[in-house]
Every structure is written in structure tokens, then in C-alpha cells.
Image (tube, rainbow, N blue to C red; front, side, top):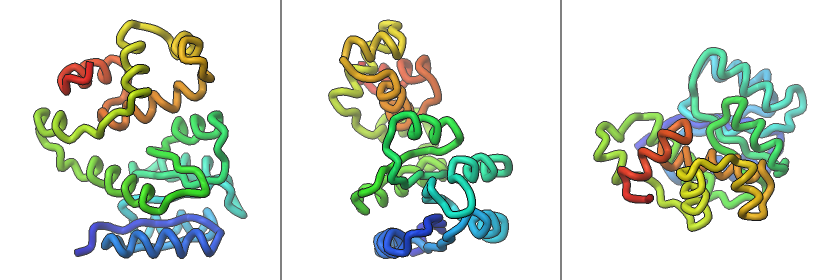
Length: 198
């Protein structure tokens, strides 16, 4: 059973081969491109269901490529990059990326992220009740941050309380919103209460 088409955009042959092997084992059809130009052509001609995107490409910055793709469609995009600074991760997510995984990475984690994003994109969570029961579990740290959010603390204030960088809190926020399938703090609090997480 074909679970969907995934485009892997990376100029490292070993990475592409590894990702391809694991995705194909999980019944995905995999296409690849080693430049941004090839990736745009494939997106225009074959419309993949999801894109795994490196940032450091030979002809274009992956962040800019994500922006170009976002002009015409909402294909889920997972960054797969050796850049692990919180500022880059935040920029990538703000630029339209749906998730971010740093190299070196666990291929099984990547497959799990692909599965999760495509589940959301396909809209199989039709009703509010289903959404509540299919929420991905929050970690202890994510729950704590959510509690501070509910109390009205800013990212900066939460960072100070947890002795973390403000950028790190923003990354946590993105993960929390993604797991709860919401877009902002207010929706996150409402959804968490519905799911009895707060």
C-alpha cells in the first residue's frame, strides 16, 4: 500500500539513500533532488505529499526554497539539517516549515514525524473528540511550559524561570502547538484543557 509520495531534497547521497530506505520500508514512494532547482521542478510536476528538506543546498538556501514552495502550496515540510542553533530552527519554522530534525538523526524518528505530519494533513481527525484522543503525549518539560503559558507568562519570563534561552522556549512552543494541533497560545490552552492536560 502506497502511503504517499515524499520528496527528499539533499545533496548528500548517503543521507538520501538512508532516508529513502527507511521511508520505502514504511510504504512511501520516494523521489529525490540534490538542488533547489530540481526540487522546484518536481514539486511543480509531481506534487509530493511531503518534503524532507536540507538547508545547505549547493544552489539555494533551503529556507528560501521553503518560502518559494509556500507561495503556491501547503505541502508539509520537514527540515533535515546539520544546523542545530535555535535561531536557525526558529527561522526555519517561521519560514513555513512544519518540523525540524537535526543531523545526525534517527531514521525511525524521521519516519514517525512523516507519519504524524501526513496524518494531520490528510484530515483523518475529523471531529473534536477524535482530536482530543489522538493528541501526541507532552513531555514533562512541555507540560510545565504549557502551565506557565496558561498563567500568562511571556517566553522571556518562562526562559528565566526555567534557566533556558528564549529561543529554546520558542522551539518548545512550536512543538507543543504541533502536538496539540493548534496555532497559538490561546488555542493551546483551550485544547489542553479539553484533553485534560491542564
